[in-house]
Image 1 (tube, rainbow, N blue to C red):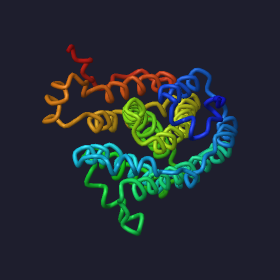
Image 2 (image 1 turned 90 degrees about the horizontal axis):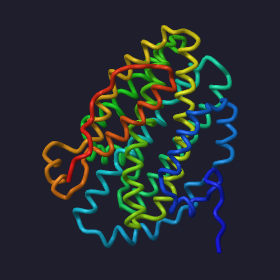
Image 3 (image 1 turned 135 degrees about the horizontal axis):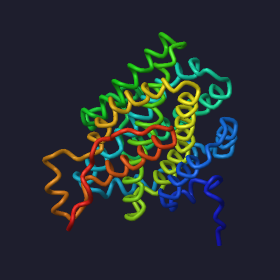
Length: 314
């Protein structure tokens, strides 16, 4: 009989069967008692995993048995994550230089390593399971852009790159860094990614889809729980140091939140079919909204947020 380790030390094989809400609860716990930057670093040391160790052969077997429509559904669901991991990897470096404190810089170096590992994990999955490999990773990423809606492209490709370039050009301008952390850690990772991960991983677990991928993707979510807590802690401290910084956080949320919720919402023409199957098309944006509210409260803000429809009555 196998012995389950605590979630913090759980191997990929155990994470395959771990409900994603168990992992997301780590963020809620961290928001109640914000850890130090050093403690976040120590968590990173304890939570290492290796993308090269994953055996994707069971997932490939399942992929080969899928029909064309199911394959398209899987591609649309996962391409944004693959492209998103590459985008956050490419844009994080200027943040490290711009951080005002050394402990912050030290932690962000661990996050950069995480994001690179996540990108390699997805690259292996897309090549070895989905059969998508254009030789150069850049060409593969360009190819899967077709599966992303325009709202995802605006947030993950355009906005992340623009803000990172502003930080690179003016690393001493704290407004740029605060906007970047709000976009990167709170909107992209703490709102969009967590909602999307929750929907995908719970569906895959309930239907026993892609077991090897589930283990790795759950480890990705565990990594990102550290990143999100870091972002919330940083923004809270910046507002405590100078209350005027709150306006920058609010402006960034006003700018990006509605686009993020729209990116998570199925296209209008697909909503009647989803409702006809007695499924909720707004479950992910509604979860994202609840997640954002929690983080805003801990940061120390009070502000209006976009409205997401309530659950449908079937």
